[in-house]
Length: 290
Image (cartoon, rainbow, N blue to C red; front, side):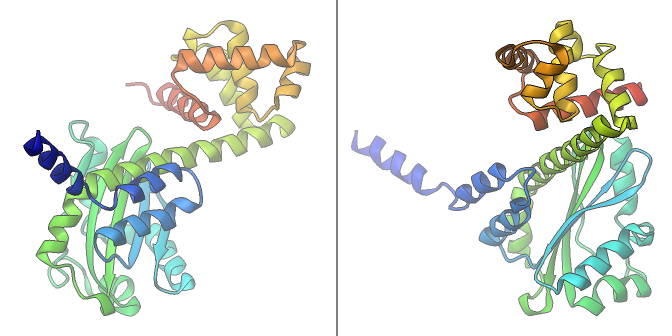
């Protein structure tokens, strides 16, 4: 019994002390607090001074998800703007990003450490490293249905370059970190779609047509729902309140709550953001059938 107790205590003591930070990051998915909590998690594991995350959709268009950094905000904004404006094509990792967007066998790729002299051209290195005191970088790419998410982690001059031990430690958590970032991206994208849908509800915009084209035609997985459940979900996506849905469909507010609960259960979701995500997936499948 004593040996078993000792083993249990040893195992408990071996649990990483940053697991609480993982929980905090997970709770902030889709929220503004995500970025600062992610940096807190990373810096609990090893020093990271600058984190920049970019996205590439299936058509190859670049986007900036977020930057969390110790450098001045205006410098970080300039870097991100310059990168997505076209400099990404000079990034030696861009080919790996493109390859992953076409590779359905692997959802995650850890990229090799940069060779500043051999891989980066002089102008790119000066603009994105030397000028802003970034001296080292680690990167990884994760693939989602919406495209790829390119995650970059940097050291500034005062912190020194990543050691081999640093890279080994970071590499162990990169799949987890990039998965969290990917989930954050999907929720942010769903929220953006939700805001567009709410605007469309009052202006008659294109998002309203998209919602009805997917839910009204019972595109999977919405084919699991009854007609009334689909009507309720469509109005939720368009930003209607429970009272507004009640008036629009001429049913009691309690009935709206019941239909919503049933629909969410059939779809395997619990929140409006998840409903947005499912709708986006359905739109993508309809627009880009395989």
